[in-house]
Every structure is written in structure tokens, then in C-alpha cells.
Length: 184
Picture 1 (spheres, rainbow, N blue to C red):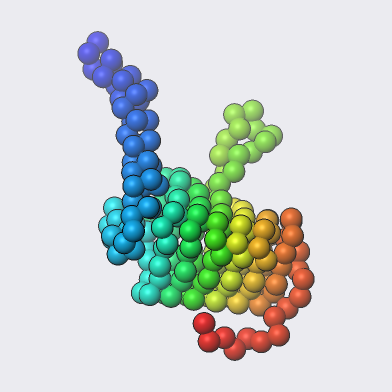
Picture 2: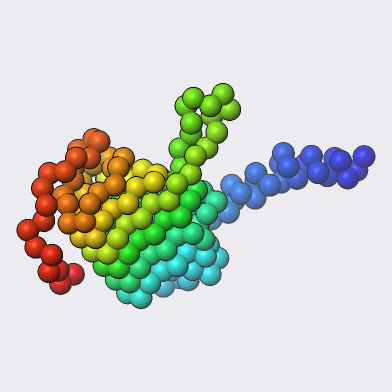
């Protein structure tokens, strides 16, 4: 009887409280530390996020989902304030990728036709030298091609070809970039 009660308590009370506390520490205490070296140390060592050389995750970035150890950020990337990662599946960010403020990445959603409203996960891939504008939203299963530009405020629901510029909700191709020789 005691073991059954202990199991019930752990499942119903202790585990959810521990998950809440872990998320709270990550998104309130750690993400708002003024020193990027301490934040990056925590992200790498405790969360298992792979952060490349010269990349910076600014203060105020938030994380959710159970797959934070599946987040890979390449070399010389900039992830500024208020960006939000929902990591139910792998998030892969290439080298020299630039985000604007408050970019949101969602690898999970729910099946509206499922009676149990089950969760669906699919990875997000952002290739080298892509530029994601402020407040853009990238949804599950999307690949942003090399050198692509996502305009501010766009909602990306489908793959974006390399060197394309997309914008809107849902994001549509505006044009192709005029150069493929980048120095950033």
C-alpha cells in the first residue's frame, strides 16, 4: 500500500513539480543572467544544447519541450532577446545564422482530428547563413535553405529554398537574393 501511494504521489505531484521547477530555473533565472558565458555553460552542460564557437544566446531566450539536448546551434550565430524554442524534436541551426528579436521555433503541435489531441513532433532545420527576421514563427517540419531570408513577422509553414526571400502569413516567396557571396 505504501509503495502504491508513493508511486501515485511521484506521478501526480513530485514529477510535475520537478518539471515545473526545472523549466522555471532555466527560463527565469538562467536566461536572465547578465553573463553569456554562465548562460552558455548551463545550456551546454545541464541542458545538453550544442552551441558552436562564436555563437551567442542573448538574455531572455526561452526554451520548452523535453528535447533540449537535441538543439544544435552552429558557429557564429546570434540568437537575440525573447526568442523561443519549443523542442519536442530536433532543432538544427547552421553556421552564421542571424535571428531577429523574438523569433519562435515550434517543433510540436497537436492533431486536431485525433480524439486524444495527440502531440505531433517534427524537426526544424535552418541552414548556413540564413537570416530570420524579428517575430518570425517557424513551424514543425520546416527546412530553411542556405542563405534564405525570412521577413519579420512571417509564419513559415513550408520549406524555404536556398537564397529565397519569403514573407507573410503563411510565408510566400517574394524573390531570390541577388548575391550568394556573403561575408557575415
